[in-house]
Image (cartoon, rainbow, N blue to C red):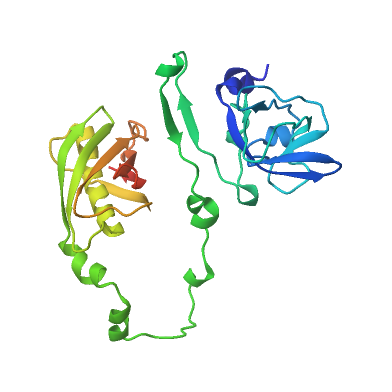
Length: 300
C-alpha cells in the first residue's frame, strides 16, 4: 500500500479552467491552467487522472481529443484521450483525488504559482457547510526567484557614476517620510482576545496624509503584535524584548486615514523547544478586512 495516496488522496480536489482549445498532433486539445506544476505524478510519472465536468460528470478516457496543461512541452498532458464534446473555453473542470504527491511536489516551472486552497467542512448538509480560504493564490512577488536574488548593483563596487549633494537629495525625497510621518498617531480600540492565539481590534489613525503609508502600517502592526505576544505569554505588561525578525507587508488597496480600520492578528504556536533560550512565533495579520495583510516572525 502507498500510504500517502491511501490516507490523503481523496481529501483534495483540484479546480481548473479551460483557457483555450486548439488542434495539434491530429486531435483537438483543451488547454487548462494547471499542468506539471501541480500534477507532476500524472504528466511525468504516469499516474492515471480522472477529470470531471463542473456538474460531476466524468470525462471519458478514450476518444479523439485530449487535455493538456499550459507549460509548453510535449509531456504536459493530463488526459491523453477523451471526448471534449460540449467542453468550451472558460469551462471549469474538476480533478479529484489529488491530495497526495501534487501540491507537495508542486513547482514554479515556466512562471506558474501555487493555487489557493479552500477548506470545506465534511459531514454537513450542503446549506450548512462551512467554507474558508486557507491559502490565497501565491503572489509571485514573494517567490524565491525574486526574494533570494542578489542584484549585481548591491555587491561592493568602486564605480561611482554620480555623487549627489545634500540639497539635490532633499529635492528628490518624500517630504512626508522625511519630515511629517513622525507626527502620525494611532490608537487601538476594542482590543479583544478571541482565543488563545487570535485577537481583534480597531485602529484609529491621525496622519499627515489622507492614507495609511507603508511605514505607518508597519508601526501599527508591530505595536499591536508586541501587545498580542506579551499577553499570549501571560504577562500583564511589557518587561521583555520582542523582536520582529522578518516582515511581510502587502498593501493591496488604499486605506484612508480618516476612519477606523479592523485589525486581526493570529499567532502560531511557539516554534522552539522548551529548553531553547529564544521563543519564536509567526503573527499573521490583516488590516482593513484584508486590504493590507502579511506576517511577522517574532523572536522573544
